[in-house]
Amino acid sequence: MDQLELLKKDWKKQEGSLPKLSKEALSNLIHKKSSSIVKWIFIISVLELVVPQLAYLFIDYDETSDFTRELGLSNFFTIFSVIFYLVIFYFIFRFYKNYKTISANSNPKELMQNIIKTRKTVKYYIWFNLALVPILSIILLYKAFNSAEFLEKIPSDTNMIAVWLIALMFVGILVALVWLFYRLIYGILLNKLEHNYKELMSNGVE
Amino acid sequence: MTYLSIETNQTLTKELEHKFVLDLEQNQNIVHKVCRIYTNNQDAHNDLFQEISIQLWKAYPKFRGESKFSTWMYRVALNTAITLYRKSKRSIKTQDFDSVLFKVESTDYDDIEEEQLKILYKTIHHLSDIEKALVFLYLEDKNYKEIAETMGITEVNARVKMNRVKNKLRNILNP
Image (cartoon, rainbow over the protein chains, first blue to last red):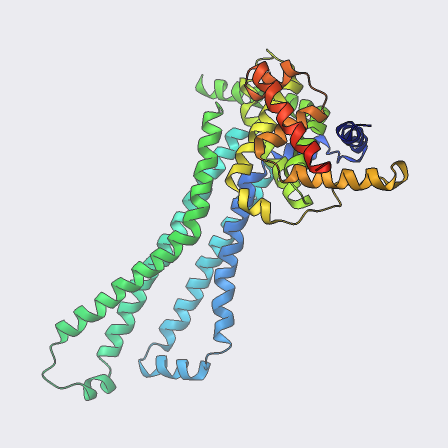
């Protein structure tokens, strides 16, 4: 027998061993793409919360609390932490909700609305984190520059405006770095979502 | 008024999706077989299957029933596999050949035939994206008219290309 005929015969025989997906599985399959992106947004946001906590395990906690106490910011930091975690948990909850609604969804129009909603949530989340950097830095700097320890160490004729300008420049760089970090992580995911959204649009769903 | 039209629109898409899923379920073998030709492990198979399903669903509203659903499916599935293969050619090439996907039933063949089949499947995996499509359509017993229609080439061209790839396979087995 010709080898190619043999191949054809074997190919036909393999048909029996092909996977068979149910209608439900297939229906889920065609909506999965967006849900997996949204799932990643959710997972990354949780990781972002958990990873810094792990870092604290290696940082001498007493030393940092001494530092904040010296600056007279102990109470401020406790209150700040509580608010911060509340807000972050709220965002994680929103991400989770988005993930749930998108995965359970089967209607292209609703899917599009959910994509818009998810993109908005992520944007707010990034703005919140970005705004936090300068606010926190400026409070810390203000307290540090006015602490007795600092004033003792610097020469009395130091131009404080220049010190502030340099400090603010570093804050600016820090904000840019944080922005870049978010742009990188969430930017890729958001772009994919947008691409998906456009595909749905071109599919005639409006 | 607008609200009502949105409602109708939603019902329409739901109906369309229902119809599509039914069509896809009945013809899913085609997609699985395309995946078998273009991928060499289960994960890649599943990924490609999903990608093809999505592309089919995207193109479904434009399917007017001019050709048979299965013919249309061959075309969309192959196009998706070819474009996807182009994009990740290197990553696919470096993957190991997963013999699990192509189980040669040893009881029905003698040793020489079994060995030949293994070599053939391995060779197919090293063919170009277009050549794979041709071999696939040959294995599916498509005539040149259908092959030309699916691949968007002329019948003469299909015949020439097919003979070339067949000879290529034969030459590898009988050097």
